[in-house]
Structure formats: structure tokens, C-alpha cells
Image (cartoon, rainbow over all chains, first blue to last red; front, side):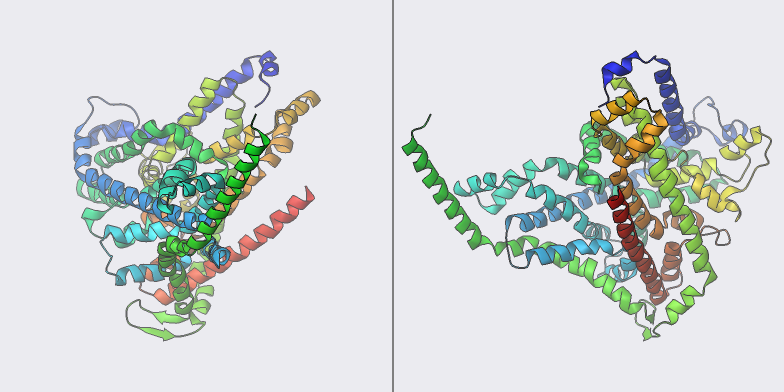
Length: 284
Length: 317
């Protein structure tokens, strides 16, 4: 922290300028969203004559139309993101536990072999992976999106988790072993509770990644009833514009609706969220 | 205080326990394989097998179902002589360089510096949360809002309205091959927000107070302080974002897949989209695998250069 006492002597004017600059930047960042909000309550006529200002009365009908389209998208996306996140966390932490608490032959070699997978970019694996998922009959199955997602990011998650798992003092496990606790017990009652911060970080990043994923849902979930938010929004916008001759009211209302779930989630977890994102895990 | 005798007894006890637990651990050591087994199976299937197939299939003509014929380097030759591929390389270099330099280094460091220099704890907290909120909005919403409201080609698009104030004629933005690439760069203006600035901010708070004090006593300007004190301290984070931004940028094609389709007239195409299109548009799976291999080689070589280069700069410091 910079010395506060000394700074106080400086006049308040630079601080006010600073605040103003930040406020303007914030406004610019939020401008597209504000515009969406304003335009989402316009009828097509209002949009043509006064495209950028608030117009009355508000056309709430846009929201009821949009809700019909986007509510299944939200539940699909939530289901996939939650299953993907839970699956990833369990798989990564179980594996990391195996690598930290057991000293089996070939441990470091296997670990390096897994970590070196991070060198292989997704573009190289994309096509054979797609063919494989298709041949497994997982097209139009949620599992076809969740399973590869769980495994693709595993090397990175494993690297993070093993570092943190190694930091848990060994005495805790020895004490538990003397009390007769088996490894399953040690895993759930010592390792997991001790590593909640890093698990929360991985959880958040994983969820956001799954929530925003474009490629796999688009390739695998072809059935319209299974589509996720990003894919469904694009086709909703296109279809609606084609049918109505270019109006945007309902799609824009849809954009606002799909943005709400995570904002609500954030309201409850903001502290953990910020701590997770700023923890030292994310630098080299 | 414990008596000597008691203490030594305790020591013996502890040693015994350690020995026992060590023995216990040794006995159970092979159980480790069981803990890592699910991951190994999954990785073999989804992370080891596909790249091997990709390498092999890149030398073939493959329709993805039942036809495979080895044609060796013909795919590579065709790709490397295809002007559209080179157009894609040019585009992706421009886009990635812009995204990294402006998006994840310049803009976010500026934002972190601004917030860092706020004196009021309340204001700093408010801005930290406020600038984070864009992360929560699905990326697709951002893309759609920019294309459908701001970069619309009609005069009612916001950007056309805005430049109209200054008497500039409306432009087609994403609809014209001259402005499409620039439009992709404009998307997301002012390119700040998200979580990266928080990581820079955390880095700034880690700078030792003595460093800052000394700089103040010397009376250096804010700009000099940022360049000579703050930036060197943020080098780790910058490296992280540059590496990650490069790897994801060079193979990314989200906007192309969802919005532009690489057009108009290949103005926004990138190698990743070129590959996607060859595979899922024309079923040229072997050809697409070869594009994937070329991307892999580019990323691999650049990562190594990056490692070597950044190491030498570190040594100099």
C-alpha cells in the first residue's frame, strides 16, 4: 500500500479528476448494455423514430416474447455449466490427491506426461475429438459437451491443485491416519476443506468458460431444444429478424434476461469471486 | 514444564507413530494408481488419442466417415499455397497483436493504475466491482450487441449516428471488406473491464512500500513511476497474459463462426475458421487436420521463442 499520510497533503483536485476519468470509462464500458436496455423496451416504430433515447410507454411485450425463447436456453446452459464444473472439480481434485498423497512408481513421469498436454492446442485435437464424440453417438447429448469439457482443462487444473495440495501440512494427514481415517475420509475432511479458496477459483473459471463456450455446443447440440445461451441467442436473433423484417426489440430483451443469472450469482459470491480471480495462482 | 523423562517418552511415542504411519503409507502406496485412474482413462481417450489421429490424418484425404487415402504432403502444399489461408494468417496476426497489446496489456494496466491511485477505499471498492460486471454478461451478448446495435450498417446504427454528428457519411462497417477487420477491433471498446485488471491491481498492491516511498522522495513523475517501478513489477502478469492471449488468439474463431462467417470476401477470415469451415463445411477432414498441425507448429515455435526471449530479458534485469 502506498503511504497514506503523505498523500493526504496533496490537494483533492487530482483525486476528483481521477474519479471523473474512471466514471467516464465505466460509462463507456457499460454503454452497449445501457443501449440494449433502452432499446429493449421499444416498439419497432419507437425504434425507427427515436433510436437512442428513452421512449414511453415501455413495451414490456418484448420481454414476454423473449422469455419464451430464452428460458429453455438458460436452463440448458445452467445444467451444462453446473455438471461440467462439478465433474471437473471432482475429477481434478481426486487426481491431484492421488499425485500428492501417494508415492507410486512412475509418479513424476506420469505427472509430467499429463502437464505436457497443455502444449497441445485445441485446434489440433478439435476434428478427431469431434469424430470420436460423433462415433460414440453423443451428438445431441448433453454428455457429449460435458465429458470432453471436463477432461480438456484437466492438465491445467491438476497443475494448480497439486501445488496447493502439496502446501497442506503432512502432519494433519498423519494425525488422521493414527486416528484410523482412511484416504477417502482424509480427502473429504482434510484436503478439500483446506483448499476451498483454490477450488472456488477453479470452480468460477470453469463455470464462466462453460457458460461462454461456443464451439462444442454448436457442433454437438444440433437439436434446437438442447441449445445453450450463446448458440440459441444467435439463431433467435436471426430468426426473429427474418420474421419481423429486422426489428430487434425481443432479441435485445432476451440479451438482458440471459445476463441476469450470473449477476444474481455474483451478488452472493462476489467476495469469493474477487479473491479467486486475484489470488496469486494466475501469474507465471 | 514437562520433566525430561516425560518428554523423552513422548518423543519415543512420536517416533513410533511416525514409523507406523510411514509403514502404513508404504503399504497403501499402490492405491495411488486407483485415484488417478479415471483421469488417465479420460486423458488417453480425449487428450492423447485425438492429436495422434490428427497428425496421421493430416497426411490423408479423409471425409470423416469411411474414406481415407494417404496423400502425404499434398494437404500441406495446398494450404500453404492457398491465398485465403495467408489472408487468414495476416488477419489473425493483426487481431491477436491488437487484442494483446491494447486489450490485455495497455488498457487494463491503465485501469489498474487509475484505481490504484484512488485514495478513497470506498470508491476503489466500487470501481473494482463495477468494472468486473462485464465478465458476467455472456460473451455472445457482447458480440451481438456490438454487431446489431453499434456497428449496424444502416444509419440507425449507433456508430453511424455518432460519426454523423461530425458530418461523416454512414459506413457499412462489418458489411464491407474494407472496414470489416477494423470493426472487429472496435468491438469491445474501450477494451477494459473483466478480470484482468484485478490481477494487475493485485500486482500493484504487492509492490513494496519502500520502493514507492523512495520514488516519491526523488520526486519523479507519475508516468516515470509507472514505467520504471510499476511495469517491472507487473512483468510476471504481463507475460502470463501475453502467452495466454497469443495461444488463444492465434487459434480463436468465435466471432467468425457466430457473426461474420469470415466474410465479406474473406476480409475477416482466420486460420481457425478456415479449418472449421474445411471440416464442417466441406467435410475435408484430412485437410482441416493439416491446418490444425500448422497452427500447432506456429504455437509451439512461438512458445519456445517466447520462453527463450523472456528468459534472456530476465537475466539482463
